[in-house]
Length: 436
Ligand SMILES: Cc1ncc(COP(=O)(O)O)c(C=O)c1O
Image 1: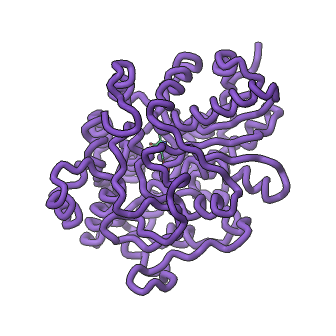
Image 2: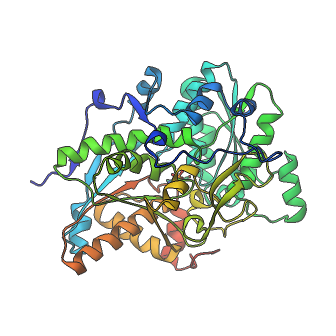
Image 3: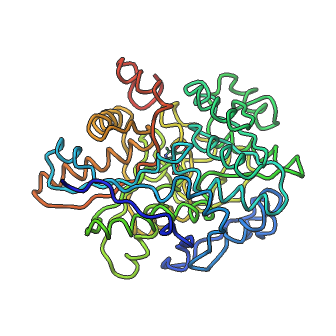
């Protein structure tokens, strides 16, 4: 029988996070203070983040130890399996070998707990009582709520309104883990009220929800803010994915020619790709491709410049690919990919042409998701379906060129709470790239 699953023992769970910063060709452009446009004093971030995470944000150390309580919590679902997609390969009649890392096996159903658990730990260690956050698709909000219950810290979530309506059970999940959730924009914050005054039927966006969450954290001295993507420390925590995948590919006796992740803020892509890019810096050939929606084409159509991370202007200015901090993307079903910006580290790598980016529409990714569900059995999150589509495109190219190729993609989450989107697709009412 052909081998399908490549599994690691719990003892092989990474002991360190991998920090790509020392391996970059040039130092990352610093975040700027929006008031002065001077490099930001990291101490200023202390109003919203604990010192442990600020230190990681600016660290130049290559390896950062993973605290034991964090590894213990990870061991509930990590190491995650690496799967060879034999059945998808057969359906595509491709000579390519396709592998995927299944991050959907975490209790929250995505890669997000990798950083949620670490963030909850560092906050609790510094006596923080409450974490406030935003969520797009609901995956991050449920992951932080899960981490909140593990580490006994209160969690409050602002969920982008369109996703709140599309995915009522993500809300229930957040509440099941004991956290509180509000649709955004809301009347609870000045930022939310300002948006509603201008656009009463605003579907919301991650930029708006971030503003509401940061504003609430700033007004409560027992609370801090938590972000599920974009920042250096979040990408750092996600590198457990790629480190495991490196070991698993070794067991499979192969090395990827191309690595693919979907891209919202950049964390699951970076988590898988960065440990491989470390090897690329040491001379090994590998392509890394970030797949985003055409309706929110940050990497493929955005500008590389300094911009704010949120709509209202609470965050520092970051050098990144951006569509503009007031861009409100159409209400597509891959809610986790509706972000105007991109991780500064991913942006820098793209700008320096060390990685690539592609964009697909809703009408492209759902057929790919269905093919994956009908061959591999897992119903993917619509976000992850962007990576699946990109993997299929690579596999079809391999078939046309008659070239063997090894493809590795990140299945960042399952779509079991996204059945509304699948219903719409199956009923033919999904629409193209914008609203239903
Ligand atoms: C399943 C899934 N994949 C991907 C993403 C995109 O985030 P990132 O680019 O940070 O991985 C999200 C965000 O909510 C998500 O829920």
